[in-house]
Image (tube, rainbow, N blue to C red; front, side, top):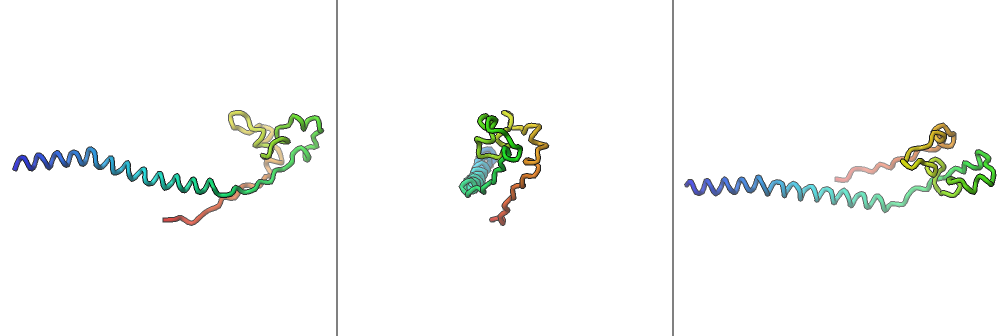
Amino acid sequence: METITSILVVIAGLLIRLAIPIAFTALLIFFLRKLDARWQAEAELPQADVQTVECWKIKNCPPEQLENCVAYQSTLPCWQAKRLPNGYLREECLSCEIFTEAPMPALKTEPRRI
């Protein structure tokens, strides 16, 4: 009888020590793969067209200045094209009417899928 109890204790210990963490890891992998597939599908959706405001026309920039202007050569809005290397916006962009009057992007909400 003592042998059977010892075997059951060893099996229970292995189950707790190995099977439960492996099952939890497999479950986590399953959910992360589903999440990744969802993000991949969202990434393949067509992007909304963004109207770029031609700030050089609003600010009446001379043609000589346009040759060196990053915003003139970019398809991004001027405040995006002129970002600092660390990703921050320039101080002059924060108070610029082109930036403050820009439309906010609308978030698309989808019903939850179970």
